[in-house]
Image (cartoon, rainbow, N blue to C red; front, side, top):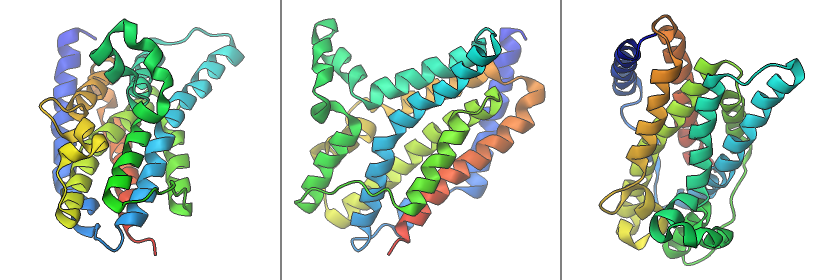
Length: 254
């Protein structure tokens, strides 16, 4: 397919994704259903997701490479495309990207300070500010099920499905983090520049989340052909609903 055709396909998909979100997922559960009473439970489960995600994203590649190893076949460009995006997301979630931006290559040894730079550990610090105490991640039954389903999608041998799950996760993450921050600020009367995790993702002059969305969406231009658009959109909606429903479910845990 020519580059111009890929771009047209990508633009068409982005338009239809916007339609899906506005018609079926317009209001995020965290906007309406996070209260002072359930905030601790929500954040314990959210912390579990934040902690697990880079491991799931990295681990998903095992399924892909063993598929090639066991069949003695070359790794496809589509696998390389989702892998390089997934690797960056893992690198970013574990603090490497921000360290290199701030310190350059001379700062590379700083990555060993995981307590300081892992995004899940930034969230732990924010939780300490919010509650005045430490909370452990809660891998509740609903969160366990969600993470297993997420891994299944991220490790799919179908490149269109795998791409859809990655795009859906990052698209949803932007909505999710903004909604969660707005609810926390409303019930706790905090500013996001006082919270490291939220400042990294939605605060400051140049927050990271929009770049994540653009990068993962860019995979569409390399992976999804015009005749695969219906399959991609079906997988995207299923994957987005998985993330969205998990957020709703953890607000209902008692």
